[in-house]
Amino acid sequence: ELQHDFLWRTTCRLPERGRIGIFNRSYYEEVLVVKVHPEILVSQGLSEKLHDEKKIWDDRYRSIVDMEDHLHRNDTRIIKFYLHLSQEEQQKRFVERIDAPDKNWKLSISDIQERKEWQKYMQAYEECFSATSTNQTPWFIVPADDKENARLIVSQIILEAFNELHLTFPKTTAQHEQELKSIRKQLSKDK
Image 1: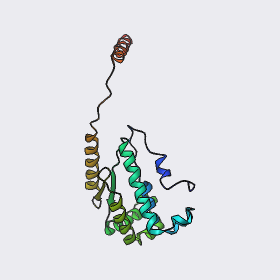
Image 2 (image 1 turned 180 degrees about the vertical axis):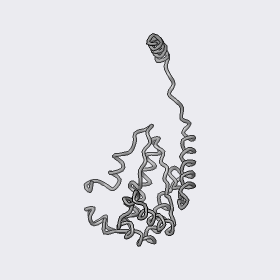
Image 3 (image 1 turned 30 degrees about the horizontal axis):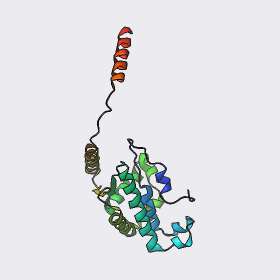
Image 4 (image 1 turned 90 degrees about the vertical axis):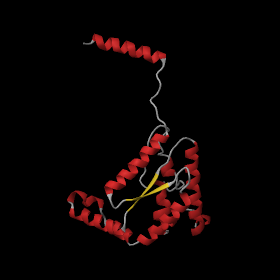
């Protein structure tokens, strides 16, 4: 994976036209987590010319926007959600994960370590949204302290996106209609 560019891991898993893909974080990890922890850049084996900290983020944002624009021009619709939790709600959910044995697996010490970087993450998110939200691929910032309402908001946005596609069932051909009549005849004989 390190022998490829930062978009490769997600790009090679994009769904073909007519299919739906859901990515949790995707290539955005590379302008969020890596931005908060720039030491990760060193482990990525990038050439020295790519180590200019200001330039690399601008370049990555531009690469993301260009790729998403390319996908949009080729009939792929991208809907980007950020489910925003307050620090207080995150703390509450972490405690719930500790208290509920069936949710213990959802929490690790690294979650607590990352929580200490809250302000850096908020800054990285702000910069990311500002640089990568476009008319074709806007970010939807969803308040997520209330899970039920967050799910309703996301569902409504997805439903609106589907409605904009004006999806229809495939039209059948005259030949296929004849095949269906033949199949019906065969099935009625099976009674």
